[in-house]
Image (cartoon, rainbow, N blue to C red; front, side, top):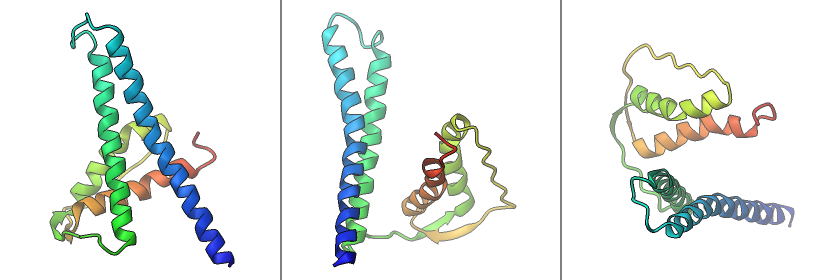
Length: 146
């Protein structure tokens, strides 16, 4: 019974974490939309800061939902992997560039040393997700990085 109880608790924690991750962008979108509706006389250009934030959070939420769908498919063995030729070095460098703001904010040095092109056969999206998970998880879990 102990493994079943642990599995249940992990599932409950996952649902709570996923709900929190989805609620945050929804709250931001709702708040910024309400701000826009309170000032109907202003132009989109004048309110571009709020519109931009709404778009960024909608994009973030879309990615979160996509990740949840990927997770659900992988759990039910329905995940389709599209193996194609790619440059592993370019995928990794793209992820590192995307993480630069986080790295700077956390005052961490992240250095990538790649001698040359690395040709590979893989699903680029899944590989990208893997690199993000591997690089971001230590930032979240470290007690020194708050």
